[in-house]
Image 1 (cartoon, rainbow, N blue to C red):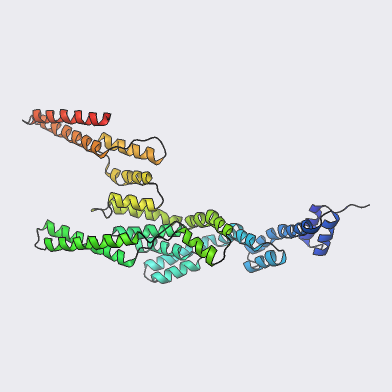
Image 2: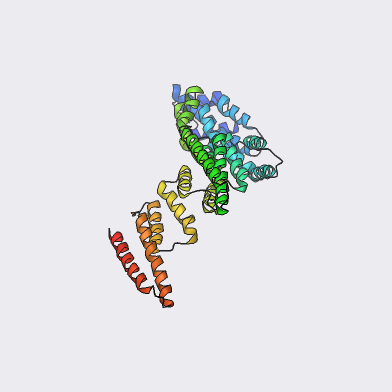
Length: 395
């Protein structure tokens, strides 16, 4: 009798290629493996040994990715779908490491060129796609970092940015038609002109009011049609699985492990700008976005309603600091809601009652300091306001 080489010995020998595949198979056969088990052991050994070596050679630039695939898939018989997974989870990481510093610089230079108008929008997007961004990712990066550098002016321009974000990270999204953007700009321009005309008591006020009314109706009708135009992940799935023939389980893997997580990471630095621009639009004087429009846009960025309300209350309303106890209470309740704690909604009428009480306190203090004749009247009004407030608060 004699000893049969161990599996560790076999792997070492194969690593050094001191044995060929025929001998590799023979040793495993002598160890007691037969049929499919024998085939699987031979395949596993070849892949297990070859993969780290191929990665090392590829990372140093000695071989191209095509040679890595040829060896693993065609020679070692790795299933192609497994190679594609490794391509995304292992090989891409090596690629990024090889060019990390240059990669950041390249994107920066492209964006700078676009801002200096050395590149058109189409040229910029094409270059970003050559850097392996998808079309919608490239469009989103352009829209935020170049197009929005001067800040959006209308609610639908903000909406366009948010929809670009949703598309870029794999969420349901809707394209904003150019004609809807134009209708919103027209409506916005008329609002500004009307406000100016009213401040001057100008004769064109009635004409502008009529034009604005028509523009509002036109815009709302177009927006109502726009709301029915969702492009969702089911459509994406239908294209990839039904039309293109991708295996359904592979699509689900990509959806859960790659599409959302990777796309979010790839546009992370740009994503932060979207929220900033929304808040900036809400804080503008006069505001470019109402409270409802701001909350709607934040929700489209995948915040829950209470999170969006909390962000608005803190970053927009709270920017000038609350003035009454119940306004502070509202901020705290918004916070509790946003982080999943028990909370109570502060009714608008309670906020108003608290503001009235606070205003009367200030007026009374001023009247007393001047020994003004209206002191008794203000004291009576404050007493009523206090009782009203306390009753509402108790309820």
